[in-house]
Image (tube, rainbow, N blue to C red; front, side):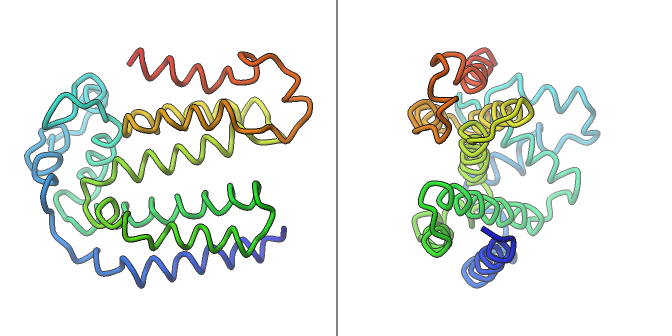
Length: 223
């Protein structure tokens, strides 16, 4: 598969994203955005010191007892960048959705082997109306982050040409997915039972083969 086709797929997805979600850049804060961002001291803290950033991972996520610290961490970085300008928050959401769609394209291409089908499947994912709330509402970023890092971890941890760097990056990606939204734990099941393309990997003991994914799971539980 040549780079030209990868770039063509990315351009197609970018154009579709602009047509479908471009107007969301003009939207204001709405719904849960007030609780998660505007009235959340962890996001609007004045200094954004290292200790304040670390403290985000020590507290539950408002308004209840959920634990999605990495999502709040990205909101805090957004506030450090542009204060309470909603455009920058919407922009990050759009870029995350585009990145997730492209990672899905790469995963589909690996599994199906067809550039056309991979492009079409990722395009359908990108424009599917079921994702409108997650993309257009800033508070939906937890879903975008968990999908982006979840699919990224699948690509890295099931790669037929795995390396120590890929395994470490894949474990970190899975951990960030679960720290963004707890539902990302289902990704672990996909990784554990996804068929291996390498005979060498298939013959390895189960726990050795999936050690990075299991380590990420333990780290998430411990946190």
